[in-house]
Length: 120
Ligand SMILES: *[C@@H]1O[C@H](CO)[C@@H](O)[C@H](O)[C@H]1NC(C)=O
Ligand SMILES: *[C@@H]1O[C@H](CO)[C@@H](O)[C@H](O)[C@H]1NC(C)=O
Ligand SMILES: *[C@@H]1O[C@H](CO)[C@@H](O)[C@H](O)[C@H]1NC(C)=O
Image (cartoon, rainbow, N blue to C red; front, side, top):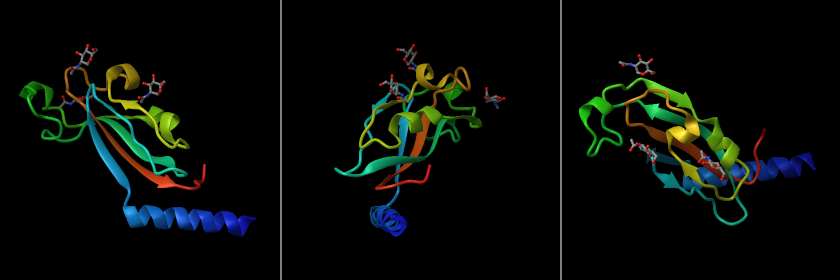
């Protein structure tokens, strides 16, 4: 039984390596629907809502909303919504994550994998 689980874990990791880890940036107030192929589940590696440079999600925004590049909050709710699911819905907004830096236009930076199995 244990070796079977290990095998699935290995297979899941091989799949991820073959297709790469998924990464996306979602600008404030937009929504995305991450998903894995049928039979696979999402595992969220990291999720951060804030701003770490002045160029990402900067189109059409005034400089004043881009100048604070050390704005960050752990977006744990992404994992709560998505880890273990085949697909999910994520909205990058202050309503969902709180506002870590008022007046800055923020983005959500998420890395996730598609896997068979994950260690809790
Ligand atoms: C995001 O949406 C909320 C609610 O509609 C709105 O109050 C806010 O001004 C929007 N933020 C930006 C940066 O557009
Ligand atoms: C998580 O799901 C709930 C219910 O569907 C939704 O209201 C919430 O906005 C979602 N969280 C994120 C981070 O999008
Ligand atoms: C950026 O925002 C954070 C969080 O509000 C704050 O602690 C920090 O002082 C701000 N940095 C600048 C340069 O304004």
